[in-house]
Image 1 (cartoon, one colour):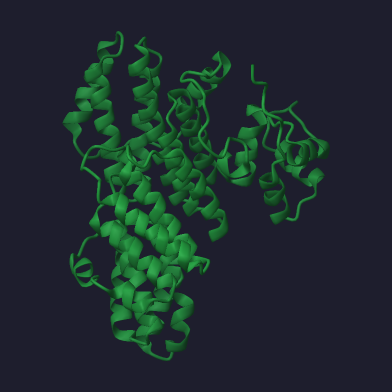
Image 2 (cartoon, rainbow, N blue to C red):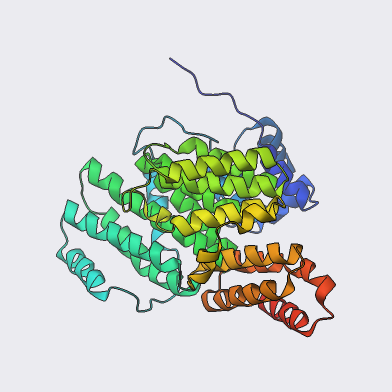
Length: 423
């Protein structure tokens, strides 16, 4: 019989501590400020976790994620690739903790949103009580998809409020009796919803809620034996990574969790992100290869047959990956190739903000100020309407490129506007 794997050092924990210039004793003090009274550690505990790989257990792992503002995967607190766990492997204590977290997310008050009739049907099913059935789970999955689609165009705070209602319903349903198959479906839906909640929490700058929801989503992925959900969590986390190198590490882990044949849209997303981050590091060979893999995988996507968190993947998003990758590699000709139609679509979604900002940056690099300003202003309009952090970060990257043009009033006005948006 195979024994337990030997503990491994966790250099990720050491790196996060050293980035903050903390000694191990200082890190222990910071952690103790987050944990309940009576639950204290010292610097020796950090030595054991970082250098010997002994622990931490689930209790302290959760608070370490909160301390460093990172999901467990990026801290080395979960395996970096697929694991052979059986579904439903949570202990009774872990399952109670999961339900407590899921039911106590505290995302704010509910607001009205799209498709009220569908929500009312779900509410009616909840009032009926009794065991879960396939129709109820299907209805719930539709609501999960609707929330993911809503996120593409609506400010994070509005989506966040709807998620509180949704997660409360999920919590109630998870207490009901169900077959193993239906429970796994429900757990995956809970994980998909919690992952979205973590994403929009990060978009709002609420790192505490983001960390809590990433923990919930990861627990759901483990309970449902859902490696694709783990890939989603890592993909979202890559946007918040402090450097392209860290983002690439997360994306490499995400790729290991994905079955390319079963989830071509998910694979295309992760590979497209790898292309962007490799390009940001100047790794042209890897960037172009990843982009080609993303485009090839997307060619086999069938609409409506994947997970809700890939609903944003379309031809425009794929072209956006290409524009961003080529622009970061300094290949202006390839970046601008065929993008006219995409720019003329006039979409107002968050994806459009990224494309407009990326193409504006290419024009600035080539010294074409007028189209750059026009596209950047359009991107800023979308960012203002949707309050998207990812879009804002793309616009912030334009400010250094605007400096040679600040003697031009229109360029100076745009720079002032970008400064106001960043405030």
